[in-house]
Image (cartoon, rainbow, N blue to C red; front, side, top):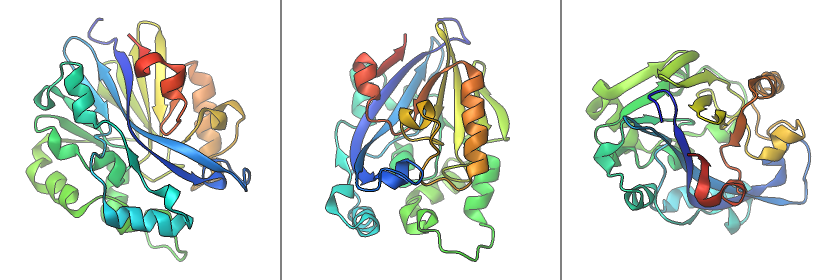
Length: 263
């Protein structure tokens, strides 16, 4: 692979179930949908990039809040192999990870960021500002609750210990040559679409849709913050001509053997 062409591999580390309307706008009322929580490894000869650091240990408080939110214990996270252990099996140690893209700012995506002490952390500037100084709202949004979001220790780590390794991304930006990002909203203010150049063509990862059926059927995310943002994301994905990787699609490791999307 050349310096601006990458291999892409999905590293699933856990699963949980959610109510259907969280995934599919105004539908699937009486169904549960299984979400897969994953990091994505993007690598070439010089870089080892992760989209999200993952979460390797249960958080009893988070489990309680998720169960309370959904009304059922099946919403609790069921853990598999940690991202760190999967990387180790591929011969990649924690200090070899060069970059981590964080989207969204949630416990399942950021909790293990301290495991990778040399990585540059890429965060959406406008999303980070909204997280630290949220806009005034007159409605209750349970999905934005601080206790459901970034653990206190991670916030302190990013703000102090790792601040010299933080890269704040503009709404359209180049993360590294061959990997670009676009702010999409929909799921959270900091949500991104990350486009990766591979020898087989572009791959786009996004947490703005959860499942491939959102894309295939043009069905907005049930938890969308904005139907207009969902529409713009759909247009972007369709016009990209890329392989689309929805962030929480539990079929990815079935569709791609061993999670390998591109060599």
